Image (cartoon, rainbow, N blue to C red; front, side):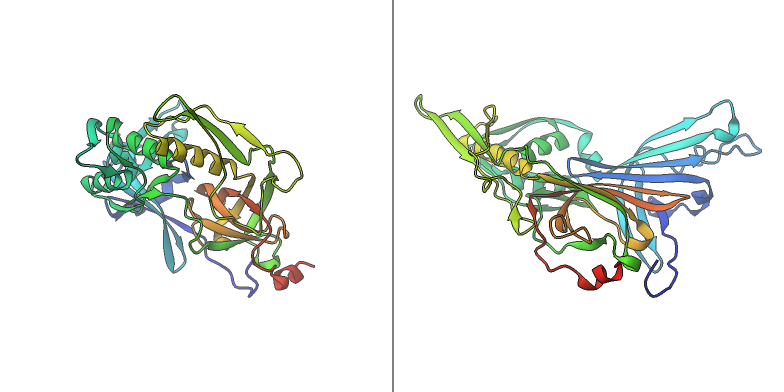
Length: 372
């Protein structure tokens, strides 16, 4: 409970279809779930009780409100303010009619706006010697062609680059080649490296007395991930073999690297299969992406009470964790979040990543004192 003794209102799940809130259907909503991941599109699942009217029609599936490709938005309303959880399109509608009519349901599956980019298979030469484009320029153009804003980094530039896939699969491959992350959120396509330097989201508070908002938290430190990767590749000219070791280059989210460089042992290096890539620059970029991913040696899992946290935790951003000690407390990168609205309330189950130990900020002595 809040330390001031004030009660907080329950969090409301707000659903809009084509810009109109579907208030009439809220009494039949059993559960709304939104799953976010750094490596996949955001997907929402809405489960409604399905009720047959006296005229023989069914309240949910026959209303014409939830149809594939209708625009949908889900917000969390915290008393006087709301925050967007996801927006996108209805992808699938499934009506289940078991023998017991009282158990009939309609399940709505929706996906973020990246679904727009998975409708058309393209075969196209995006870049050539006399008209070179960077991956960022290509991503910008694809976003514009589909009515999306864009936040992009330049990435690799090409003398020749062909596409033979849907737009989203092509962009996913280019993001992997650059060590970038790709997401579509709130009408904007984002194509760039992990954003670790921005302002963190509201703090996750563990064992903080009346200020606690975290129901459970656990952290794991997996040291058996290499600190470097060794890449061997045929030189672009001649028969020589290029041999190099690549180290992580992401900012540390703590005081000390989680790597084993100072353990007094031989270097922890694994040799990778030759990275795919038309050029040495792309092979280097793919290797860098792999070693950066290996640097996330610390992972954490937990669950937030959405009422007490009073915000929507988002992937692809950082968040501070307070109350778990000096080793595992501090800044993390949000990898996955599952948002669930049901009769039990609003819960956010999260997975966090970290490439360092030690809190860069001093512990909150007042919060620690509150639980003694």
